Length: 54
Image (cartoon, rainbow, N blue to C red):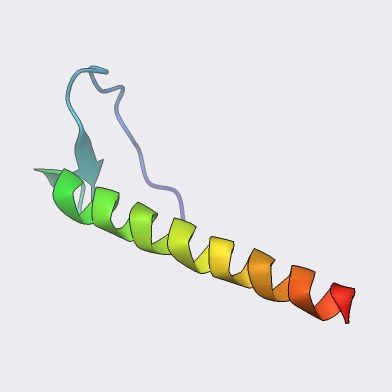
């Protein structure tokens, strides 16, 4: 399926949906999700280090 995405101005942080509707990206959720992901990755790395040190 090909969706025609128009060139957007870089200053506008918008998301183009399936129906080509533009809506602003919720940056609070993006930042919160990124923080959660980083915490999980740190935890996994620590667990991997502990498992390899056994």
